Length: 100
Image 1: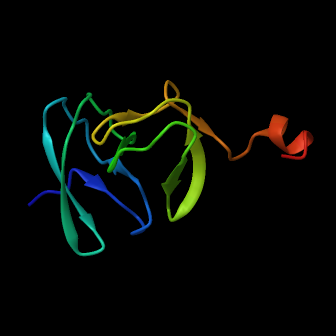
Image 2: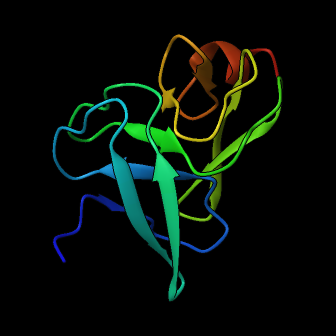
């Protein structure tokens, strides 16, 4: 079975597409030896993230086992996670300057 997406750490709540994926496609993701089936709600471009679980507004997005940002609106399982619903907390000079 060809991998369509990868999860780096079992704590992750997003997966990364390793090829362009289509809305309605079912993707099997290996989450620490357990296969999780996700039905995509959006097209997911190569290298982009999609949610493995529902993530509420203002909650952490976890990739590589680390918090990489937070949601700016609720995100449903299978939804594209990108700038329209997520803000990065890494490398943000504006947050670092304000001491956040």
